Length: 384
Image (cartoon, rainbow, N blue to C red):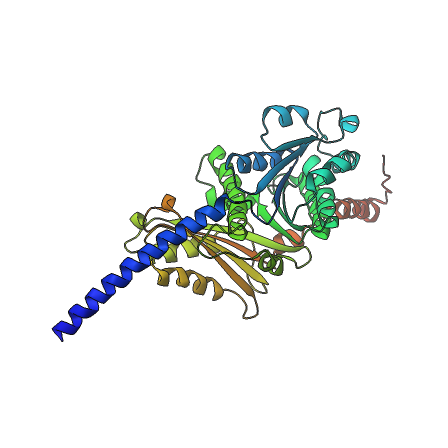
């Protein structure tokens, strides 16, 4: 018995050594693939001030295979505060480079005036991420036009947008109108609600809290880009990505959870905490009931065990409907230390009464007209 144990121990040591050798070889293969030109052409297209800020953050990450484009009506912001592979000053003849004044129609007109530049920037793209803030003029007016141009060129379009605070009453109606138009031409729209930033990161200083929202946008795009461009242990084909996101303008939400083993007693606790954090603090007030799919990007430290990786998938699947499409990508990164875990969840087909039940700008105007008519007997007239 003791002899058998020694033989098994020797055999196990031999197998572990061979496994480490194979892992080193595979690591070299992944590095080689990482340096090759990826087969999926990815474009991040930032619209307006908020979208250009997100584009700048993504550009600074120098993601392989990702081209960053920023478009704005504000020439000063574009020239002095924006970094991208390509910049487009929208509708110079329309706005004179001075912005859209918070008017969605002017932002849209500026985009239409520069439509050929937009199409040229999108040419040949397979996957287009559109980033914008809803509620202002340029982002709200431009994003749907960029999305339509990308769809017409055959790209998969994933829009990631922010919604205004509830106290910004004048911007909410505009934001809802813009979101409705954007959903027409996007395969998926991931919504980040600024009110949820307050709930989740409210104890942070203002600058840090808003930086967290930008970080989540950047990290979610990076997670998808690296997953489809074959730079991880488990990757997804582009066809897998289409299968999850090509559901006709459905809403999605993103959640991020990260834990280091130093913050928990065991590796298992780190994994559970990261998943729970990602699922319990999405930046949109949603329900997972009826969700159509989940893309889960997992980054782990160099010594995280396989059983804990599979546990992540099981925990997320337990929250979804049985028919939901759940796909997982895995990367091992020294940046996570030995036992760190980061989980990024993009859940598609979610329901958000908070967003979908709000009234558009047109509906709000109509409602005010009806109140004036019914209570005061007054007819409201429109002034162009």
